[in-house]
Image 1 (tube, rainbow, N blue to C red):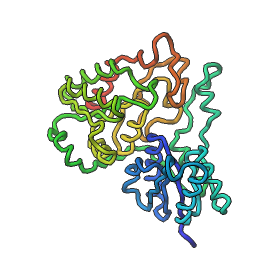
Image 2: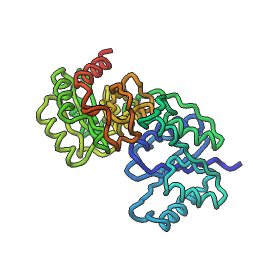
Image 3: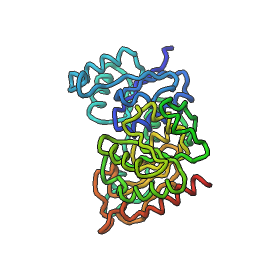
Image 4: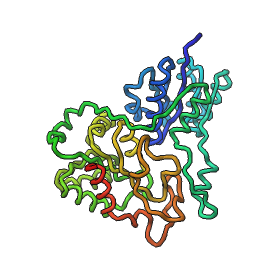
Length: 342
């Protein structure tokens, strides 16, 4: 009997790919004889380091894999792995085209059910159906189950600190202080806690003696983080100073992460670090809570119109003030202190 080999497709976004990695870790442990080929963007390769029986194959959607011709080129590349099944965990145009090529070759395909109807019911303003939906990680696992494999997700954080990069060891020389990561930015501005209020959080945590490490963002965010680092004691900007592999290693040695509903939460989850998360127009009920994280660690306001967005690309419509503005910085600080001192 030929060995089972699954091509796994999920190209973006960063947080979603990190969630896939959490699932594949457990799948690999429970199905050690099955080989996997993860097809995603090269930048996300570090998420899959250390997963047994997994090869990573990069998609280059802006160059060699652009358009139908480029996707056919990608199909030919990954067909050489001789897969027995395709797990489409993305269900976008690119993944559907590649899946179709494999289907025409007689390869079994299974695709994620994103639950679009349920999500629309959760976010609509009239006749809202407010209930927890299936977690996205379980939707990923369902694809493997549909392919005939057993997988039982533990939904538990597994902390395995990685070796701290040599260039970051100075940041960890004082082991008497609790170390808190802060991921204050997000792809969509509506998911970002107001920066003036976040600054108040940082000021209070710094004053309380915690060491703070700021992650995630581009040039603009880097400047904001630098300003905070210069202003507050024991506060360090990591944006632009470390690659993703190094950031994963650093995060794995933290005590806690403070994050928006964004990739920072999912990256911390991947390396087993508890997260206090801040939610605005989105809601954990939509299924995107970090793997192994607790709903009780989500900070959000109760309002009958929440959530009004799945991905955070729409403004909050709670009241005159946004739902993010209605969250008091003291609430976040107190939750972090309770988690660290509990």
